[in-house]
Image (cartoon, rainbow, N blue to C red; front, side):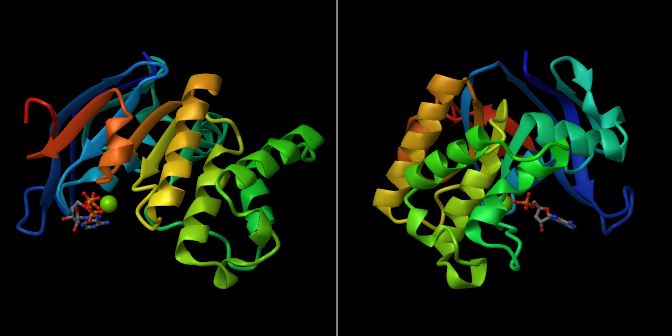
Length: 229
Ligand SMILES: Nc1ncnc2c1ncn2[C@@H]1O[C@H](COP(=O)(O)OP(=O)(O)OP(=O)(O)O)[C@@H](O)[C@H]1O
Ligand SMILES: [Mg+2]
């Protein structure tokens, strides 16, 4: 089992006060290597909150997050940063590109903490991904000189440049037209098939969701099989 969420309870604010906002409520999920999972739910239902927990960006109030059987909620901050860099790719709803760097520099950033210089193979892999999502012509531009969809595609490449085992994507096609959304969907499916990347994506795009093999709906703080409603 790659990832297990066990009885996750998560809310915001001080528990047992009127300011507390419960979001996830006894949520369970089991993810096997190579799974392709989509999650839908209304705005505010907790999808980003859930991805943040899966990606060790936040900790649950109660419950456990196990990655390959290890409880990552007990990791120190430093251990978590290393764990994320080594195993995870994260496509954020807000793309979080660094404004002072070019597209290409932004994409190479996750390769730097590994302590070695970036190899030619790694650069070629980045260039392959950039070409696949159709932003080669923009590689020397900074985020302020890119369109919203180009920023999103840059963020996708950045999330994939380390060949993560688990890719967590928050509406990865949200800012894209149909043609570019299809190209990105194809890329994700190719990586899943050829590199064995496990995909968990929050999306309302039916074309993307339909390519996933498990579909869940976030409802009342729990995941329900979206076919059963
Ligand atoms: N840091 C925070 N502090 C307080 N409340 C928060 C915080 N982050 C999220 N919330 C609240 O938690 C709920 C779930 O938020 P979340 O971002 O997970 O929703 P979502 O399903 O991703 O929505 P959307 O589809 O709009 O992106 C919302 O009601 C939101 O206002
Ligand atoms: Mg969200």
